[in-house]
Image (cartoon, rainbow, N blue to C red; front, top):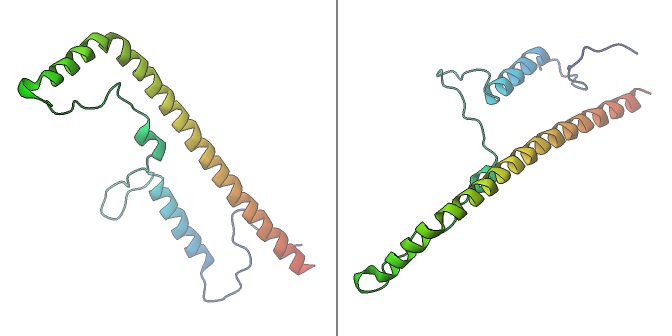
Length: 135
């Protein structure tokens, strides 16, 4: 059985397709999307942030609501309660936020690894199909 160079495409027998040019274009686009190469206009592509990081940071309480009455008495009570609990709530929510960010990073790492394993499994399935056809 003939040896094939690593990373080469299998199963394309069309003489009009330039495999080397196609592979070079795919590699260039992949490098650019990973942030390793600038686009034609010289700008670097923005890295995609994990969705979980959008909700990682939390605050101990929502934004103050409206005054609610004459003179804003309810708002004054809200502010005084928040000041009284600030020493306790902010450190707790900061720890929860850092935990959420750590979990989001681990989830994103696992997602990338699963995606790579899925691509590898599809590649191997394609190679076994081609080998079965040759036999």
